[in-house]
Length: 118
Length: 111
Image (cartoon, rainbow over all chains, first blue to last red):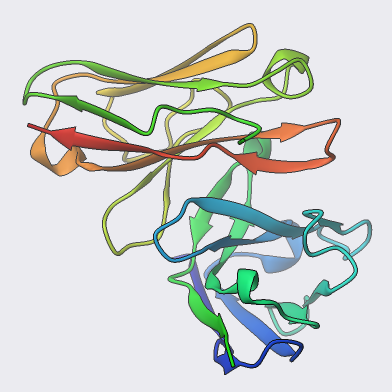
């Protein structure tokens, strides 16, 4: 059974940093690209970042480029999101998702909540 | 303004058919990029409903179907059931903005 379990969400002050983790199991993690998708309270889905199988050519939504870094450790079956210079507008539930055919996200975790507030 | 535009809400009675549109542009859907659809039940993570414009993952009922034409795509749900009440999102890639985008979401109410 495919499982994605996010962790690391917390309350953080504006300008602060946080590192999210996603533990994957039930599939060959090294064979799939992965994404982070977020959802602000009461709002829609927003793709944040994507990393291919080998960790090269990562892509980001414009609003986080230069502040967030996506990475992975295929030996540990883990995905990460390093978030720096956090802003109030980064407050959201952050989902880890597996990338699949036609650019779809076929499996999602349950999310980890990041709140940026003083 | 979203890159992919969906109606904020749709509704239908049990047993009826509803459609949800997803309107893009020449840099995303119109450029040939595929559209995927997700269902998000209240308080849960999104679930893949349709991928590659028309394909259903294993376990998704055939009451759900997708289509694409020009710069738009649509999700159709037939034989509406109370359990279909959820938020629905389309998703595609935009070559000008160089990224993945979701539509703003459509709330389906089963009357």
